[in-house]
Image (tube, rainbow, N blue to C red):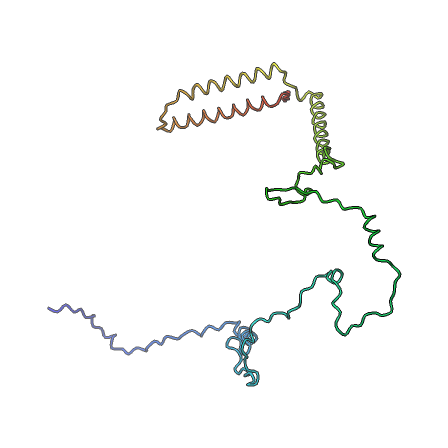
Length: 259
């Protein structure tokens, strides 16, 4: 028996039917089509990416010479000091130069030189010192062995910036003292007496001793979280007490709010 399944026969299947044609919808046209075309034409430029279609060829007479592209150094000039003309000696006379003739003087150069040498004050040698056994010398003035600085007018005097700083510190201290006196007059602050300061200091030290005794009794091995937390807490509290003790020791006068 065949497994093919045929549709049931019907006389309506013999009636010819019109073939349905699928009508495509009209193609989508953007309303900005003309604007885009215009912008594209405006942005275009000839030879924008590929360069000009024809490039001017260099002339054969202007060919590339050797070393023509190397950097050229400026022209060499002879070095000359600015004051060379003032200190330089006059040039040597040439063979063609003629000396001045007919100049005479009645000055006795021998006698004049003798008188100048007799009346001249002898030059004092510059003080120097020998810095080795061979006798090599250097000037004594720049050696640091001459007491030049103690002969200055302002030697041993306090510099002006230190005096100004002292005045500023003194003024700030006076302003602070006036502020404290005003607050104490209003009753907002009071000064700790020596007895109260001593009692507070002893109490802080006793608290530190108690915490230190507890810290010494801790287990050597901190293998659990509670042991570790307790050790860290004791160390933090001891450090804070040490800061407070140092603060009270450093300041002799302490003011507190009068609540």
